[in-house]
Image (cartoon, rainbow, N blue to C red; front, side, top):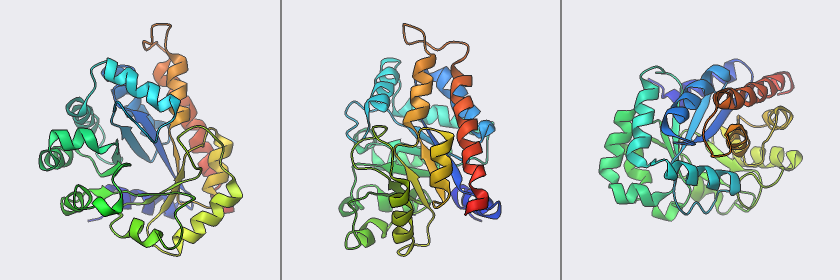
Length: 277
């Protein structure tokens, strides 16, 4: 039986389009609002959801996601509560793949074996742990794969053909191509260069290649979706949520709708590219 991730990409291929992958931070701005946002993503057009695990030192994240993590930590969000939110999401959604994205420290502190048991039980489909390189695969990657969890690796503009085989060796689910150098949400990608990079990576793997970092609008999503198997949007959604909060950083009546509205725009952009693939 194919995994939820594999089944989702197969469905998108059958529809002749890229997948839309959306990222939000667990617990931002509070756990209950975070769950409502998570539940709204698939209904608005997201095919796969990435749920950020808040961490105090997120080295790969830009200001928007760093701030979201601090809001979540301030609201008491941690690994155990993040797993609980995913369990609650799964109670009403059995089909949408959920990728937990974060850093190794909270997982290591929790205990790898204990974490993997809890992740499988909660309904997580894959992991993106940005500070574990291929040389550290014994730490988490290989145990995760043995439990049926996809371990999704990032490739960057500086990942050359000599390095790429090591990056891809134990990657599963999809390959996440980072379209810009630097941190999240700080620049707009060069769409022509992205298309060339997707083709290059595709010569080394049969896995879907999705592209993220710097995608802010439906037009950006459409441009990326012309060449990639998926489009990841994170900082723009986190920004939309942030702008909807009141002066004290609390959710308002329009918070969930603000995020869902941008997801609908992004989904329309991805679907508009279907004829150009």
